[in-house]
Image 1 (cartoon, rainbow, N blue to C red):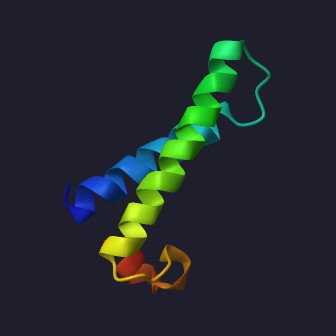
Image 2: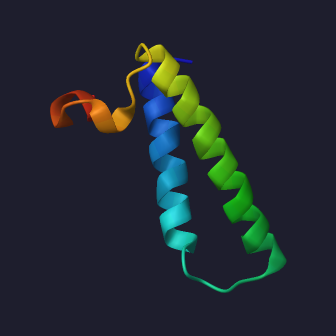
Length: 66
């Protein structure tokens, strides 16, 4: 996986979590939130390692956007 693919995946899961946030839903939706949250954590960790261990929050805004 490339750096840009990981960034896109993290953005996708972040958007999905944002759409589901605050909604009381079915058990399926609750499971989605749990899975998307875990996937976002794993992919963010991979992205962090690819960037040389610098956390996304520590990057300048232009570097974080790609």
